[in-house]
Amino acid sequence: MSGERPRFASTEHLATEAIAAYVDGELRMNAYLRAAEHLAKCVDCAAEVDAQQQARIALRQAAQCRISAPLNLHDSLSRIPLAGSSTIGEIASDSKRWSGWWRK
Image 1 (cartoon, rainbow, N blue to C red):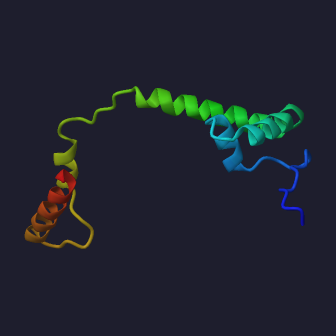
Image 2 (tube, rainbow, N blue to C red):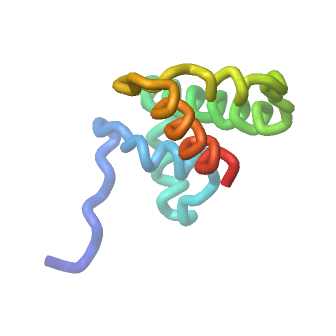
């Protein structure tokens, strides 16, 4: 063994992790160039890179959106009886326990 890494065969597909690293710009130059060479020849991997890029864009845009829940949502959810609770006292006790957890 000469200590060299095996050369990436152009007939192999890029791993999902390699595609994500390529899109995120996390590959070292040599790996990036090999991946780019493969992508120029492999429509399947190129489509995966495109899908990863679209997902990345969608996630970044979603982070800019403000999402708010109705003000009474927590109260409405806390009034739902828990499975297995048979008395009002048990329901109230369970509700207080989970309410404290929710607000932490």
